[in-house]
Length: 318
View: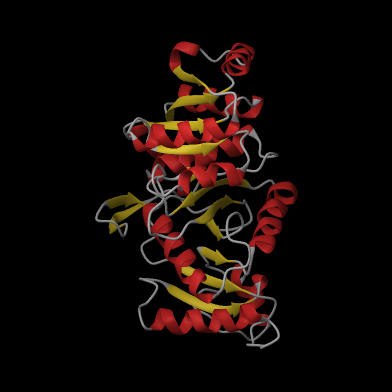
């Protein structure tokens, strides 16, 4: 890993300044603990891994929590996990749809700065988020960004979008990239390097992601995506390894030094990140950005540790 070294004041893209580049989840948690504690509202919070993550996050000073769902089950799990009920708020809502709407309402009224998907299914939560009258959606485009720490790579990886948009077209990929760039800036990456991933480095009309990548590079050259360095189409080996790029005869400004990995679709992004988790012991946290507040959107199989890292990332962004 890179050393955790401050490199001066940088604009995070939203008028705020970040003093240091985040290079690990340990550093991320350390920074968040020094900030004002953010409140997290969780929809259908009656899950063992959820309560375990909440216990750790509250004890470490990362967040305070509003647990919305089946109160009896939530309280039972809190007792099982030794989570002091005096340290959390519990709101009873046994119906998942009601839990989702109450979670969004809690944020909308200013009682929480971020929200999280618990046992409620994703479509139910997103319908509440995007409700035109009572939701917290904006005119911005929603997309998922995964933050990945793996020992064999020199920096944190931002992977997008493996959790929200199924098969984005090139216009949607512009929004996805802009969202990811905002996250990178918040983490202290002054000028993110972006790889538009594909199986090959040549544009092939039979492989739409290569055509999209070439278009994105051209748009970035015109300044349509922001202050980034972008290349594509580029295969993952070249994006992650300068030696691989050199062997393939590829000259690229992002080779072996990529910050943001733009995947072609949700399937490839999901497989990519889960492969790193299960085969490379990667640390991962993920959020949906583009709404009024960060949304911690997790897989049912995600561990308490992944949930904790996702809470910390949401707190960093809120």
